[in-house]
Length: 388
Ligand SMILES: Cc1cc2nc3c(=O)[nH]c(=O)nc-3n(C[C@H](O)[C@H](O)[C@H](O)COP(=O)(O)OP(=O)(O)OC[C@H]3O[C@@H](n4cnc5c(N)ncnc54)[C@H](O)[C@@H]3O)c2cc1C
Image (tube, rainbow, N blue to C red; front, side):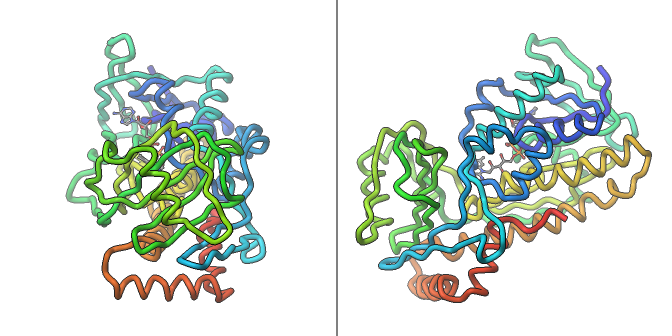
């Protein structure tokens, strides 16, 4: 097989890159080792920056998002006895949208298949070759177990944190930065109407809690737990009563309902540079991950492929390499801003057991909820700085 861009990974980064390239007449093949059902059901992120919504809309996959997504004009920051709303449009002129990553992925897969373009699901043995030439190849076994070779002009490594693309960078040329946090998030999906109109980020001495939502009838909630915590230790009753306890606020009641999904996610910051080697370009979680506190993971993947699509269009349609050469530096500037913001939100909101740190966190929360300029800085970063 031959294509212009071989895309490894049918997550948000790979699927959106394929869609953006198709709009510009650039041919691609998407290779994914999981099944279609699996990638469409993988519960992950759910908050889209305004810029992400604009990119999805421009790529022709915003119709259901505009119909079903919930526009949020702010968040609540809470610490015991206080709950303060930050008004994003008033602070920075932008909003965010609650719309699940599962839905973004369904929309992108639906659009691609409806246009007759290729996604190979359930492949195995993905391997990358000849990346330092202008004829790189990807080899794999297709879903029937038949060995295949995909010849391309460029390979886009959109295969997430554990995929095979990033390890192809020569160790001597690669630099990585890692921060493992001493806590994790226990996340649940529940069939119950959200008890709040906008997300509540709650600081509590016993640990952080977050009330988010996916739709008018589905709530998403999180509890800070230890990284080695076991899901089996958390009955439904224990989860709901701990959420009630950490999010308690006078006159407010948390509604409970059947829990339909639960998982524990460790929290880590990770950046790998450069994001390009020869004809291999990395995007999304393949190159960086952030703790979910700033709601940036999915949005960064979208920002990367937006920049990458322009670079590849210049390279493949017009033979101009300038944007491809600057891709890594351009993407990494935004990656580091989001990495800082995600670290900052995480540091402000999670209990470490250290009372000095707790007092600093409370001081910071009082500052952000009372100073318009501090609130504006949070709002600007949360809603996403302009893509360009
Ligand atoms: C468990 C979890 C929970 C998260 N929760 C949140 C959250 O609550 N809020 C938030 O903002 N962000 C969250 N994130 C982050 C966000 O979901 C990611 O940043 C986002 O998925 C990045 O998209 P991506 O396309 O770069 O990577 P992915 O979505 O990881 O997609 C990579 C794709 O590559 C495929 N792949 C891997 N290896 C191969 C291979 N060898 N061959 C072919 N295909 C391969 C994978 O199956 C996958 O489909 C979460 C992430 C995880 C892992």
